[in-house]
Image (cartoon, rainbow, N blue to C red; front, side):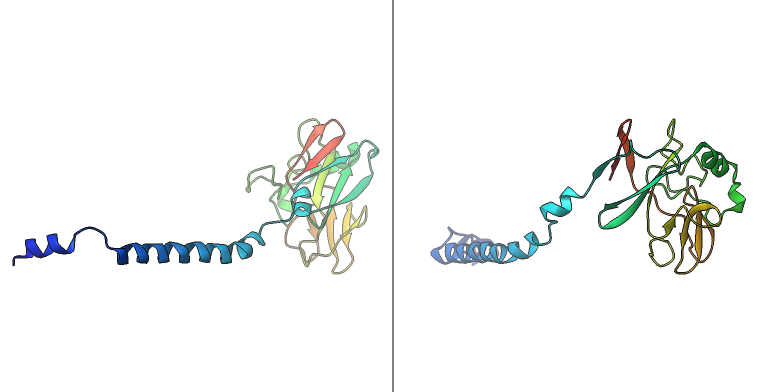
Length: 192
């Protein structure tokens, strides 16, 4: 017999054994998926976590100079309505004087400078600042309206932030991070 003849004989119609192999393989695959699904499904965030993905905060009661701390994703978030004087002082700081010259504002590109305006809510709302309230040194929660720059002071290790949340003194390496946020109404801030 030639090679051509052998191939035509072995390539005949599927047999009952072929069907059983295929059926067994499919049953095994379905069984593996049904066993693995509970493990995969438990990794999805639950409804309470998804609900906290973003929050809205009404800030109409915050007059200039006042701050509010809210909880978002298990972290404190500082919201501050700065006075005109605080906005002007933050704008007057030269970037060369800052320990961390980056804005750390998730609403802006990563290389945005840490100017007073880039650390604020933006056009027409420069007085508003929203920051994650965790010291960038070891994650402590700084005290508001404290320290030599009138911003935040971390008593644990002495980090001092100004009214724009920029690190000015102490061991903290970076400015306070700013989450993604926007004004959905004139007095309502959406975080996340």
